[in-house]
Every structure is written in structure tokens, then in C-alpha cells.
Image (cartoon, rainbow, N blue to C red; front, top):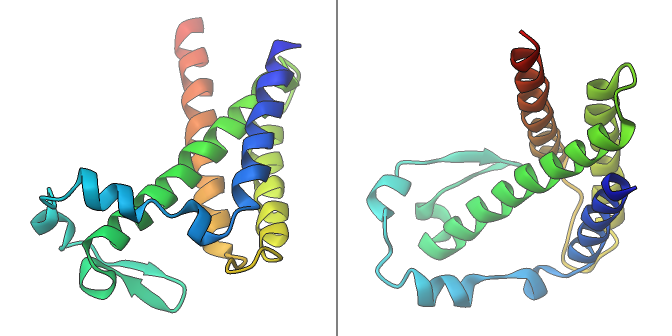
Length: 152
């Protein structure tokens, strides 16, 4: 029962966060305060990340918007990784638990992106679904690997 409640909590957080506009979610003011000295700017300026029909970089967006972009994508990766773990553990020790968790997470990501497209200032992103699914694969993969190593 606890496992399902944890999964439900992650899903509620997902629905709330994807219902917010970009302006409501923006952490630029906090980043400008906390990272006023622009740490790692030189190292981060070497990154150029293909996203949609553009390349996201410090040069293109500026330091704070680029850092926010990285944080947002990391949040996708970790958040959906946690949802995948919630599905994996809620499924229990039945067959295909890893597949169900990863495929289920991908489906949730697709539905969330579609639903998010109705939020003002937000759009549907296939690349976010890829990041979300990658998080699911990595998180579930680590758990499966740890469980196999423990059995040996």
C-alpha cells in the first residue's frame, strides 16, 4: 500500500507542476541571487545542446536561462525516474516489472506532454518524453542490476 501511495504522490506532483505556466515555474530570480558569481560559466559555455530546432547554450540564452534549462531537464530525468521506480515497486515481483515500469512511464510522459500543451505558454515536446523515458530506463536499470548482483 505504501508503494502505491508514493507513486500517487509523484503523480500528483507531476500534475501540479505541469499545470503551471513557465512564468510560475521559473527559478531565474533565485538563480540570479544564488549564482550571482556565475560559477562554472567557462565550463558550461562549452555545452551546446540540440533541442527542438535550435541549439541551447549560454551564448544563445544567457547564463541563468541556460542553467535553468539544465535544471528543468534534470528534473524531468529524475522525476520520471522516480515515477518509473514507483511503478516498478508497485507492480511487485511479477514478471515484466521493469518493462511495465519503463513503458508505463513513457505513456505517462506522453500523456503529460499532451495535457501540458493546453497550459498557456507551454508546449508538447517529444524530446522531453525522450528525457523522461531515459530517466525511467536508468533508474529501473540500476535497481534491476543491484537486485541481480545481490542474488549472485
